[in-house]
Image 1 (cartoon, protein in one colour):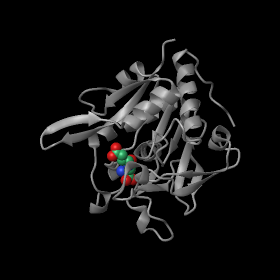
Image 2: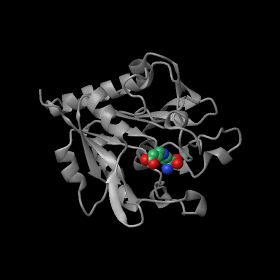
Image 3: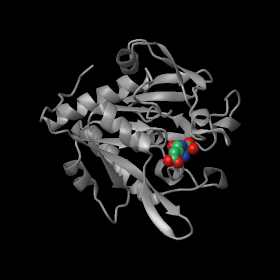
Image 4: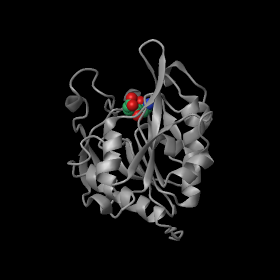
Length: 257
Ligand SMILES: N[C@@H](CCC(=O)NCCCC(=O)O)C(=O)O
């Protein structure tokens, strides 16, 4: 059976000193192929190469991946400071309008880490530049040393709101997750529903109020160990089901509360 296509938003990297490239982690590609059951299509997030309309037509759903550069604070009405670190304005230019278009059409998407932050900003929310500087917050950044397994180790608990979409998909109120980010949600966008928080109050799982399609995002990295992890697997398999329905022409009806 023909598999539907998931566009995996890729990041820009300079390989060596002088070889520009777009890349995405193998774990993203495998999570989409092996767990969601879709064709993983890596997308260069560059408006000079692809348009939002072309992407909406080409792909059935989207994975908004992690990525080190932060969303530019001008996208949520704040000034850029040194604390904000590096940016990728090309990725901002593609992902923010693409997320809004997906929400409007009911086209499925799943946001991860930077992708989670993009969903909040696209929907009118704001971000803290460095959550570890806030009182009472733990350091959610990636450990600087160690193996990949050590960097992606499960490091904190996430508590889901009872009856939330995450609670229903995963079947648990509390789960352990990895954590590899510096920024975090400051103010959720008007339609952004915080469905999961870490022990220190950091928002970790969101959905979009009244979205008719699969419109979920998480601050951690479920793509790591996605085939075996009991939290990652149902998230990617439900996402795959939503993408298959979209590809089969099923258009979700707007839910009214
Ligand atoms: N820049 C944001 C998001 C962090 C994030 O997505 N990290 C994963 C990086 C994976 C990669 O380099 O591809 C923040 O730090 O909060």
